[in-house]
Image (cartoon, rainbow over all chains, first blue to last red; front, side, top):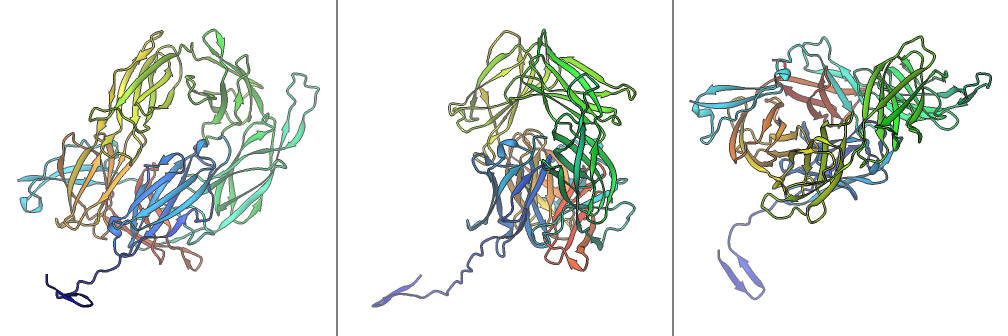
Length: 125
Length: 497
């Protein structure tokens, strides 16, 4: 590497390498919707997110957790026609009432996206 | 000649092939095939669709694939959302043996469920104090299941085969049914601190829950037209060592009242304590879940599971009953991937508090593998996931790199592994797998399988970004995927070739 010092700074003599900026993952869609409650009124409730990452789709990591409880380890990865996602089946757990379910998506550059739902339980059945 | 492991969605077979298709360090992995999961050629299938917020007016529903031989280009028309609403009333008898005291019609506050057979379509809600309810569902045929909460002195109610093709009113009148009287003893004493609930066996419709009285007695009203019932007695406090009693009973249709009593045996609590150790030898300081499941109780009927946690010194304690127990220690998911869930067995004798020996948690095992496509070429971007068969059914997953290789830390216990290729020329495949006790390279070959593809529509619109699950007629999940921006989906399965 050659570097010529001039009065105004350093002159770089090598070919320039263009670095593509990382595009962070985006949560495109989900069920429930972003602003909805997550209603746990049945034996099992399915939650999922659909994610797009334009330059790093093979290295996406999903982290699901319930605030004040901890990580949920039962999420399963999804893929389909260029999109990726993650789904979770939640049991009817009374101690989760009033807490928040969170899903964070990270690429290998640690860029991330996140979505949260307030959990509401109905009934004791 | 070397061996390559070939996996199928319901099985796993070994076949020989030339050395040119294999990586040099490949090892034969010996995994037993589940006989009941093999040869699924005769099954029929179902597509479950969970619309996302990209099409919020639609609800989850199922599409049957019975009698179809070709699964390419399926045009799946989803059903519109309609509302079933109405008022629920019931004739409540007074809790007296004097038949001259009249009862009265009451509005019923309770749990209301619409359920469709062999489908995910349906909904659960609650009627208001004035008895009104509304439930939104996709159009179709449903059973309506009502479980009164207030007044609780009413039986559950089942209305079968309601055609819900448009938004309609459907009022429910619950008759008084007939009473079931009973008591639950614990040795010589009445059992307290427990509840009773009765379910219809066919539909699993629950009654209200009733506390046992101080005399261990209960009274539940049941419908006259349901004779196959399941009675459950369960504890109020989750850490109390009171077994759950589950008993199916067939009732005489002619009797005006019913009786059922049981004795769960004496509750001789034994204090058990222990300490968790990290595989490296130090105290285990993370907060693990410690689950005691009774395999066999010496003196008691029923099933019993007790859960507790360790403290930062790794110590834990629980009150158990005499018997043989399975103890599962489940570390928090994702905190320390070097530690794996661990299971041991414990014998608890009467009148002897137990200080267990230190429990060393299992260490995770690093599993590396090569995945090749049906042509024997490295398959990149394939998701390799493992779902634990026991414990909390945690899922561990990673993707293959451009060389078709993956590396993942797994617990050394059985799991259901799934390979999900991104490209359209290979099938989604599942197989039972137990990570070997030592680090090992495994070789996996994808099958080409058969295509299942189609598009989701509603009226003249496409339904994009929905979750699609394919299940067999025993509700086993075969594959999951997503519909794209145009509502299309496309995957391959090898289960019926």
